[in-house]
Length: 391
Image 1 (cartoon, rainbow, N blue to C red):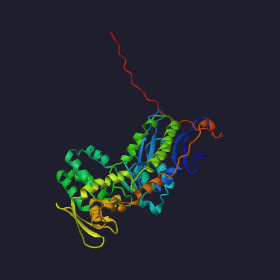
Image 2: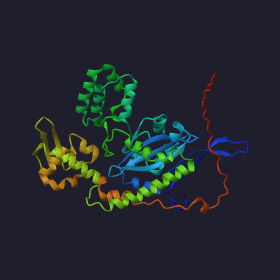
Image 3: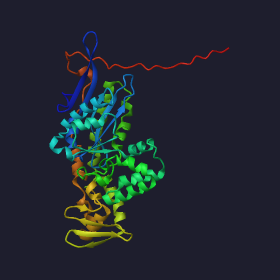
Image 4: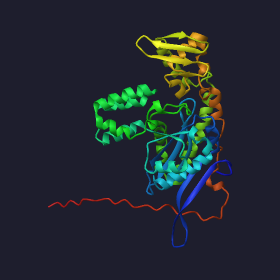
């Protein structure tokens, strides 16, 4: 890997346990490729982290970090095979990840991480990335809410309405509805900071209003074939998936006709249908009041690209109020000019400009005088058999 992709980061950590001859055992391995590092410079500052089980005799976990490209697709960043989902392994993973992605103390607050709040992850963030914005999957929050005894469709709907609210007023209205349904559920939710699960409290640095950790779950699902293979074969499958993915994305994007990524064009068409129901009053060169016949009324400032509903601020994609104002001032062909550059075809091609170079097979690798590590320890599974005796 070092010979074919020189700037790829690859760390192998050996266990403190050794056999009677002093040979160490494999414990962890981390990989972050040069093409992924370079591509992340053109991604939004949102990172999903998750861990999934390896379905092998030795067990272990595969920790992953993924982001999103300008077409709202998964962009893997780094992965590691570790002994388990615990504080030590997460701390080791995040320490290497922040170095590769150049997340220094001075820019930590510009990044957002979303996770399922897995075991050991929170203390790992506190020690390695204390100032990043942390979001937790609302689907898992609802699952925890049900475990706590607060069930039913009405509570679920209120929780999701609170999570989807983009302004403080809307959030407080939905929260009061939940309180009216169940005071205990309201108190339980009060212990969870809304900065972690409601759009009304999210920062706008990442240009992403994601509420669930689907990016990690989708990635874990796409690599299912690798998870039941021995360690080296698992890593090889992951390498080949990424190698093919980079060229495929680059090839498809070169054929796009629009200056904006197709998934975003489709989103804009849906938003424009909603915008057609609104009326606009222009009160200054760039300021507008946009309202609906049934009460929704917002302020739009095209100069600073902001709307009081905060949807444009959160996503970088003009909301229905902003589109209505853009139509009023510039006409219907100007909407894409107000989409954030992170969604452009130009940025997308830069994101996938890198290449994961091919490798020869093991027979052609350079010889090494280092002692290979022993395989990880594992506990044999014990199966209970029932003996049936026929009379």
